[in-house]
Length: 166
Image (cartoon, rainbow, N blue to C red; front, side, top):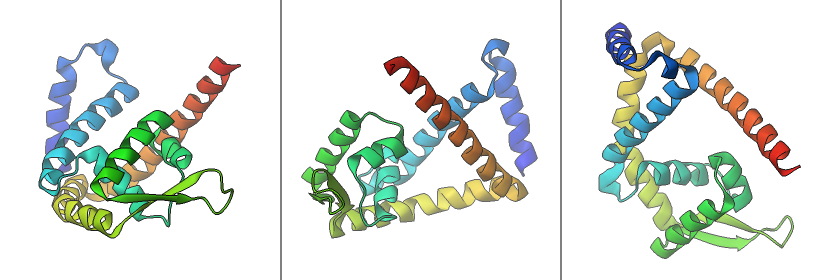
């Protein structure tokens, strides 16, 4: 089944100016398409794709600082702060003092937040199952390569951020 999708993506790639055909542009295209797909899938839960991803991170921890969440999201802390405030207004997260330093705080999902995440997860699951099925035997290798690319991009971003501030 994966071969049929390769043919379709080849047709899309042929329509794109050759100067845009590169791995980072392709990842951007996949990211946009994936966000739209997940937005549609989880819409009935009241979350969007980005919120579902953030709730997923929060659900996998006992709490995370906004700085750690910003690092995970590759987003400014102001963006994380906006998300956290929105989630607090919904009653989906709570902030507590960070026991490690007492100065910062830790964000955790509330019971209502876990319930919203679970509802979105039920809607997301069939989409993930289908994507996994369509990737077939390539799924594990795709995952490993995407993780490697993420590490490369994160390293480059950190290096570029450090050099622009120094």
